[in-house]
Amino acid sequence: MESRTHADKCILAQHCSLAGSDKCNALCSSYIAVHGHNAAGGRVAAANIPSDYQKATLQNSPARKDQAAAYSVIDSYVNTFQRQFNEGSERIKSLYLVSASPGTGKTTTAVAVLNEWIVRHYIGSVQRGLSPKERPAFFLDVNAWQTDYNTFNRPRVPDHIAEPAAERYYRYQSAASSAPFAVLDDIGVRDASEAFRADLHAVINARVTEGLPTVYTSNVAIEDLALVFDARLADRVRDMCLVVPFKGGSKRGIRI
Ligand SMILES: Nc1ncnc2c1ncn2[C@@H]1O[C@H](COP(=O)(O)OP(=O)(O)O)[C@@H](O)[C@H]1O
Ligand SMILES: [Mg+2]
Image 1 (spheres, rainbow, N blue to C red):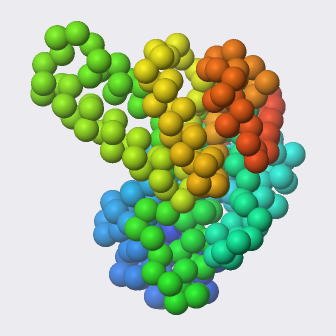
Image 2: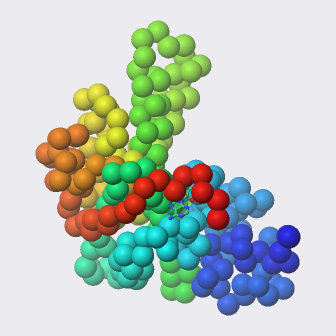
């Protein structure tokens, strides 16, 4: 049934005093700031979250129950997000969400954490009389990014194929390097050329150097990352990073 209000469509609802009221609708300025007109813009679209995952929050995540230990760490972790407003405070850590098996809820959870950042950045900025950033967070699907790389680096690829892939590749590289918060989804899963690895390393290096928090998801134990990439990259990922294991087998295809 179509609900009367926008509370179930808006990631701010959990924290919003207007949620569920007659002011909770598509014309709400905060709803538009976060989700855009027709739910196709705002900070959520700017974050580049894949559509299947866009509405994920820590509260509605299907993985919350099965991954109780992980969620208890993450629930406390997100409270450190308020440090973004305190110049000179302790750095906000990064997270490494890891399981050997796919389908344990890592990407869903990474998006939920990213959405939490958007919410806390938006509300915290408004409360302090600051303008919320247009792109407070960015989601990089490392596999898709590598596919773009391979597309424009194939021999004799026609320009109309290579150019959009290259344009997107460098745009994403820049956004992922500089966004105040980022998800790097599925690092370390495929064979990577030296040049692609260098670009991924540059993104991670830029973020760590600037003290920008990142959620990594991976099927590779953090100790083995040096085998997949190299020791330098593995060290950079480990910098100020909480490892959060996800347990069990794949829950893909389960409808709840
Ligand atoms: N514990 C769970 N219970 C039910 N469904 C789950 C659970 N964990 C994940 N899912 C669902 O399985 C699918 C894959 O989850 P995803 O977050 O992409 O996993 P991963 O990134 O670990 O491969 C999604 O549709 C998600 O909603
Ligand atoms: Mg995933």
